[in-house]
Length: 388
Image (tube, rainbow, N blue to C red; front, side):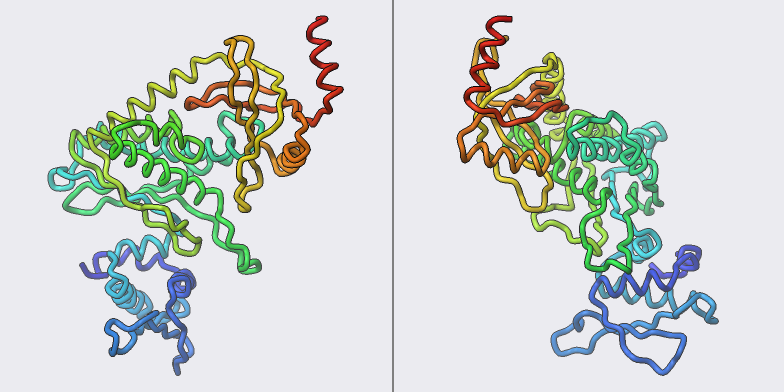
C-alpha cells in the first residue's frame, strides 16, 4: 500500500496537525538546516542497537513538493508504528476517536444495502444513546434529548471502507486541547461517550463468558442501557450471522484508562445476552415511577476523586409493597458532603424525588428536596403523616 493511493487525502493534510500528531506520539523535533522543513526522530530505534527513524515535515503546504514529502513521511511513520497508512492519515486529518467495524465473510467487501443501512443506523444510535445517557447521568434533572448529546452523534463521521472485507469506519470528533491550557488534560464529553460504549461492550463480553446477562444489568450506570443494547444488536444483525469485529482506535492526546479494552467480537451469542438484558430492562421500565419521600440514615458509597458526585444508599420501608428496600441516591458534590456528615452523626436524611426500579435496583431520580433532619423533626413528620 503506497501513499500514491491516498494522494487526495494527503493534499488535505495540514502540516501543523501532522506535527502535533508526532509530538503527541513521542517523536522528537530535531534541528535542520532547511528553514521550511522540520526533522522528527522516532521515540525509540527499530532495533536496540540501531538508529532512530527520521522523517521530514514541511512547515506549510506552500513548499514545492510538500505533498510528496508528506506522503513519504506518512508511509515511514505508519511503518514504524505498525499501522495502516489510512489510519495515520485519518487520525491526522480528523482529531477523533474511531470505531472500525469489520464484518467477517462479506464477499469482496460488499454488503447488501439494507444491512449496510442497519449497520450505520445502529452505530449512530449507539453513539446517540451513549451521549444522552452520559449527559443525563451526570445531572439530577433528566433531559430526553439534550442538544450536546445529539450534536455528538450528528457530528460523527463515516469513513471509507477498506477493500477486501467490509469495514465501516466511524469517527467521533474530539475537542482539541487549547494551546493556552495544555495542563488541562480532562476528557472531553465525546471521549466519555466513547469510553461508556467500550465499557458496555466489555460487560457484554463478560456476560458471554459467564453465560449470564448480569454483567450488563449490574453495570448499566457505566455501560449499556436498554437503547444502547438495541443499537449493538442492530450492528450484530448486520453481520448476517457472521462475526463482527469492533476495534476502537483512540486519539492518544487524551489518556485511555488502563482497564479499557478496544477490541471486541459480536456473534449470535452476543445477540442472545443483549436480548436477555433488554428483556430485564423492559421489566424494570414497567415499574411505576412515583414521587416518594424516602427517609433514613445514609450509608456512604465510595466516591472517586475524579467525580463531581457521589452515591448514597438508604434503608427504607416501602409501604406499597410491604417490605424494606435499599434505595440508591446520586448526589452532587455539596449534597454528598452533607450526607457524609449525616452518616458520621447518624442523622436522618429526607429525599423527595421519583422512585423507580432500574436494573434490579431501587433509586431516586429527579430530586426535588434533600435535607438533613433531626430526630425531633422526624417524629413531627411521622406524626403529621399519621394525623393526615
